[in-house]
Length: 135
Image (cartoon, rainbow, N blue to C red; front, side, top):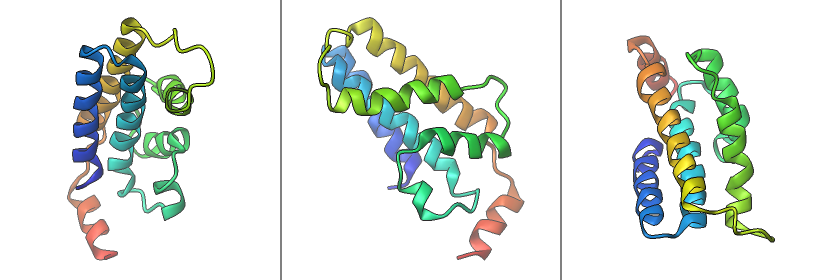
């Protein structure tokens, strides 16, 4: 399964979890979906495996944004997602923050990242030729 398909699956899981009142885990899945959507375009940047297999979504986004400048800067969204990736997975206190509204907000963030990937990170024939020449 590639990163994009995996992101689609995790994104759907986040929606289902939110609809069923599992807000903290929905937030975690939303953060993971954002990471996977971003990683789905990383392979066109010739990046080493260190970044690909990290959870460093901030630098992954920055690298992709250099190649595919976004119409709207999503760095704040990506940074917020990176923060809650760990906090929602390993809560150490205030779990009351994980409300329906909070989880819905993260679903909006995922949709923004997905829209950026789908509509602004478009590869061309040269990108594909370069990618497959390297293999």
